[in-house]
Length: 490
Image 1 (spheres, one colour):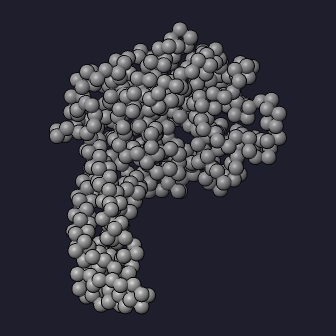
Image 2: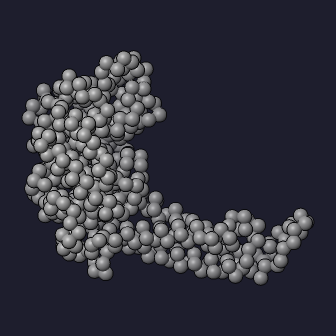
Image 3: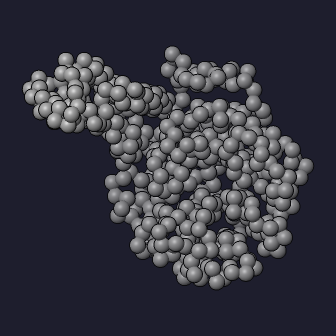
C-alpha cells in the first residue's frame, strides 16, 4: 500500500517507558510504518480544570504515567524516527476516564454507565472542547486530530435526550460531532478531523449529506475480523458518496479476546489480507484513501483487564506490516522476512533461537506464562482432582492417601514452575513497564494462581500429615451412624 500506514499506540493500559518507545518507534519505522495514532487517555498531563483526568491528577500519583517532560520526550522520539503523530482523544464514547470522577459524573448519559457522555447536558461541550484544546496545543504541529466517537452504546437514554430525539428528526451523535467539528475548524483551521466510523454505519445517507459531515470529518473505518462480509456494497457506496477522504483500520492486537495474552498471528495477518482484498474492490469509488491504521488495543475499555502487552504484539505487528507492504498475503515472503526477527513461519511458537525485536524478552516471558496458565488449568480441571481431591472430600477427609500423595507432589512441581516463570517475568519487565502495570499483571495473572496452588497444597498436606490421622476416624463414625459403610483409608 502506498498510503499512510500508522500504528496505534493505546496508552490507557500498560504504558511503556519512553526508553522502550524509542526502540519501538525505530523498529516500526524500519518495517514501513509512516506514523503513530497516539491515544493518551489518562496518561496525558492535562492541566487546569481537567488536571485530575490525567497523569498530573492526585489519583495518578506514583502510577508512572507520563509527566509533561516525558510526554514531550515521546513526541520527540517519534519525530526522530520520522514518524508523524496523530493524537486521539475520546469526545463522547469511551469517556470512562473522565466520567468516573464525581466532578463530571452528572454529564453521564446514564448514571450507572461512565462510558457515554450526554451530548445535551450543560457542560458537556465545554468539557470536550477543553480536552481537544489541550491535546491540540500540546501537539502543535499535528495535521490531524482524532476525536474518537465510537461505540456510543447509550445514546438517547436520558430524559432530555429522549425529548430532543423523540421524532428522530436528527441524530444526537451527529449533532454532537458536527458541533465539535465546527468548533475545531473555526479555532484550528489547518487541522483535519478523524472519527471512528461505526456510529455512521446506520445513519441514512441522505441525512449524512444534509448534515455536510463529509466536509468536516474523515471516517476511520475499523474492522478486525478475517472474513470479507464487512465489505458490503451498500455501506461502502454510502461512504464513497458522502466522504471525499476515508481511512481504514485493521488490528494487530487487542481485537480478539478481552483477556488475550499473546496475539493469534494468523488471525491478524488474515485481517490485513481481508482489508487488501476489500479495498481493492472499491479502488475506483473511494476518492481518496488516506491510509490504514493498525490498531493495538491495550484494554477493551478503561475498566477492562489488560489484553496483549505491546511487546507481545510485535510479531503480529511485524507480519501485519509486511503483508500490507507487499500488498498481499504471501507465505513465502513471511517465511523469508521472519528471519529478520529470528522467528519461524508459520508463526506457531518461537524457534529455539532467541527472537530479536524490542521487548522480545517480555514476549518470551509472557508466552511462557500463558503456557503455564494453560497447563495449570488442565491440571486443576483434570479428572484426578474432581475424583479424588474435590471440596467435599477435603472437607470430610474421605480420601485415598496414595492419590493425595501424588496430587501433593504434582502441586509442588506446579508451584516450583510458577516461581521460575515469575522470576523471569520480574527480571525482564521492569525495564519496559511501570510498577503499577507490573502489579496489575501479577495481581491478575500470577497471584491468584499462586494463592490457589498454595491453598491446595495446604489442604493436601493436612490430609497426608500423620498428626491429623484422628480426624478421619471421627468422620468415619458419623458415616457409620448414618448407615453408610466405608473402608479404612490406607
